[in-house]
Image 1 (cartoon, rainbow, N blue to C red):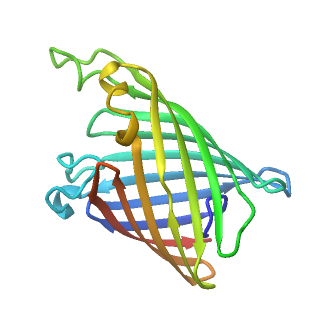
Image 2 (tube, rainbow, N blue to C red):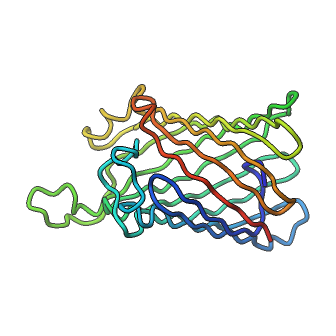
Length: 231
């Protein structure tokens, strides 16, 4: 349950500055001993208005409410012979009536001491139903705001047999699209950081403490404590 190529049936929940989150993952039968696959569903930021500290969210500081803010669907396939995975990811934000759809590849690199890296490259689009950007307030229909590419360096530091830490910087660059977005998603504006400290309580249970933030608002990030159960 400790690396980004792990595939298993799971349930999880977390509580933090942006509300309550739930996730459910289910492995799929590939018919192969070396190929693995899973789907993952996540509901994010429920009861966010009730739990959020003022200004706590680095990404959307004024968007907290008591409804579900985001729905995420992910399909993940792994080739265990070469440590390579392919991920399809769709995230829809109900607060902004927009979302992203992307496809990415992850590669496990050889472990060096207690450190192992997993570089991830991805490309996708942000879509919008038009209701948040149209001049008259009416929906202009589903359209794409911009296309983007991203690079993540997932770093795992195995501190003890049951405790590990992660530092995962993510750089996202708008490639083309609406100038409003492409001008604001370059340089340090496109850099985010993720810090995680995890404890494997049992072989099938763990607790994880997360901190997610952006480069330009580093101290104004989001904390959450997560519990995961593997089946």
